[in-house]
Image: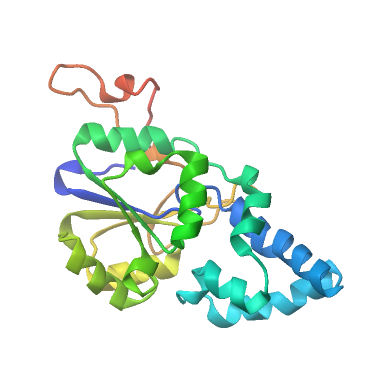
Length: 238
């Protein structure tokens, strides 16, 4: 994929499904949490899952859906503690660190823009050590609106003065990308393989990538050295 980096100042990156393998979250919400919920109430996994899935769906896309405190109150369980039980499944997608380093070499402002709750962020940043690659980390919980809401973007721009015409936003959630597009963000990319255990998706609405190697373009810097070579990898572009 060809990107004219001269037209981009800032890069906004989602976390779950974009930088991190969504398998952790899918496993937690559809397998681990129902199992623990069922154990607490004497239910089979199937019955527990049948009780929980409609409750998820009822608030999906809202801030409460992403709020570990909400689910702890609703279910009477320590959600963060349960996530720690399976934190070994937290994994960074291929070429993510390469891409973040590439953006730094290009001089782009790098922002993590996520719906994840700060408690979940703490767990995942401790596990992946990605925090140092960002100029700023923004949680939707700081702004009181999920990224699916137009209000999020208005509030976000009030604290981070960015030009929508010169901002690249990468996310695996098409609903979020649609809201960003409506707000005026020009450069939008969908991650088509958010969960490594599931087939790659397709999107007719947005440009898409399978992994971040598709966005790393070899080019010489001021010293004549190849930027990708400086990252220690043979980058390619399609």
